[in-house]
Amino acid sequence: MSADYCSLTPATFDRWVADGRMPKPIPGTHRWDKRAIDRAWDKLSGLDRATSDAGEADLDEWARANGFSDAG
Image (cartoon, rainbow, N blue to C red; front, side, top):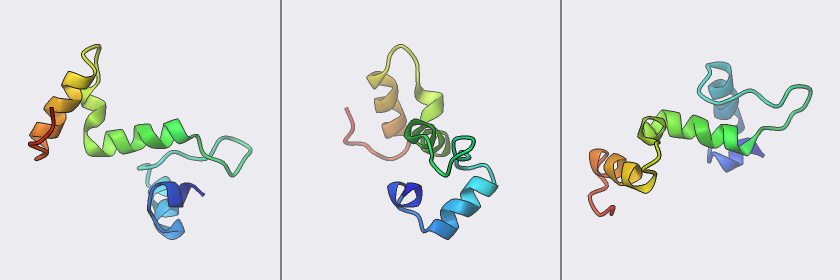
């Protein structure tokens, strides 16, 4: 279940889908694309702004900027 994957209650997950924080299900199904959910989490956390060819260096920068000083 997608709500479980996100550690959200089903009601909260439905609310997040309705307000656009989480993606809608795959058209014609009641299933979600895991990568679409992961991208939504990245957007919520700010990681979507930390992606480029540098990869891990960007993640380290994001971690430091967000209080994860032991990163890198």
